[in-house]
Image (cartoon, rainbow, N blue to C red; front, side, top):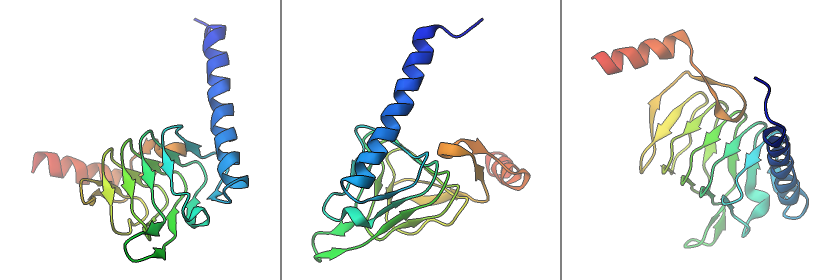
Amino acid sequence: MPTPMISRVRSKLALLNYELRRLYFVHFWKMDIKEGSRISLSAKLDKTNPTGIHIGQNTAVAFRSAILAHDFINGRYRDVYIGDNCLIGAGSVIMPGVQIGNNCIVSPNSVVLQNVPAGSIVMGNPAKIVQKNIITGPWGTRHSTQESSRETSAAVTG
């Protein structure tokens, strides 16, 4: 059955909205946000140190997430780097100075205090690695490897 026209229009408007928001952050606030990234309207990106926000290509930042690039208590700016093809889950907080590698998933409501190696899933407060060696597509869509699938199966059965 063909997709209704209203659905196609809504999808096109959503994509336009993501790109306009990205361009706003890039040109007005001078943030480093690569093409294809999707930043939710309710996500909070630190405007105290906007040039300290670096988000890779095809990364999604979900609603109510916060990315902080300054340490108010110690009065320091600390850059945050988020790699390509990542997903920052809803309500997550990325603290100043954190580097998140490519192909990572931050589970919803996680607080990331330390660097996250590429191909990892982290969750919790503070966020801990729960799975390694994953492969993600654009916006953190999951494509698991055989090795990571075996690890998950072993963890579930063991």
